Amino acid sequence: MKKIFFVLLASFLSKSMYAQQTYIQKGKIEFEKTVNIHKILEENFKNDEGGSMLATFKKTMPVTGVSYFDLSFDLNRSIYKPGREIAVTQRIPDWVNGLAAENVVFNDFANEKSSSQKNVFENTYLVQDSLRKLNWKISNDTRTIAGFECRKATAVTMDSVFVVAFFSEQILCTSGPEGFNGLPGMILGLVIPRMHTTWYATKLELKEVKETELVAPKKGKPIKNAELYLKLREVMRDWYSGNNKDRNIWQIMI
Image (cartoon, rainbow, N blue to C red; front, top):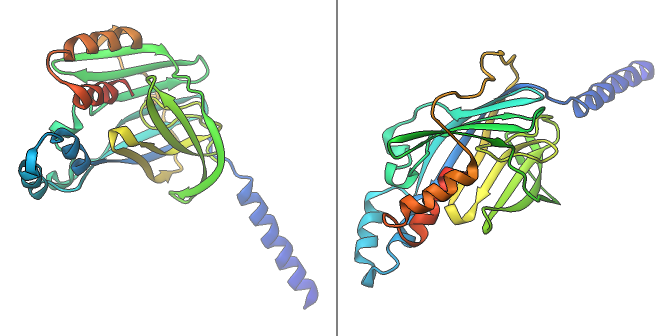
């Protein structure tokens, strides 16, 4: 009886150790993007004396809106693009979602290149550049996302936009939602407080990813990130002001 017990125990420990040492090299992740609509309304109506207009808009709009994106990946490539459709009442309103709400981002880690398709007003841009490099600071804080234990990291992008990321070292591809990458594992959670926006993985499918899925977008006018940023500052100078202008630029550039 003791012999059987020890055999079963050894088998259990062996399977447990194997599970802990299993690393994921390819698959498909669904991300849920959530925007706090009421927070954005509060920013837009800062000068609303008495708060009557703000109160009216809050009554007619949900607190948050969501949209979904899929990220397919292997060890050296990833592509992030719009995912499943949801009910209109749950969606992020167009005036909040803003510009470039359906970004397609392809990352080639072997060659350190990125190619993004972004719709801005009536124009479609193909942003071809090197991978985004951020000075990530990794902490010992952890949280579980989509069943994976993730470590916390923080960085600043676009000079002043604070970013919080949660990444899993169990998933070997160093990608993440939108253009964020560069951590020792997949980013499964992303928070940008100034945009009142979060991205969290809801599920991971362990599946073969076809070569035809992991290809860079080709539609759009070729442009570099620095050129696009200058163009946006010029275009939006007379159309938007303050937080609205900045938020729209951030939405496009991320």
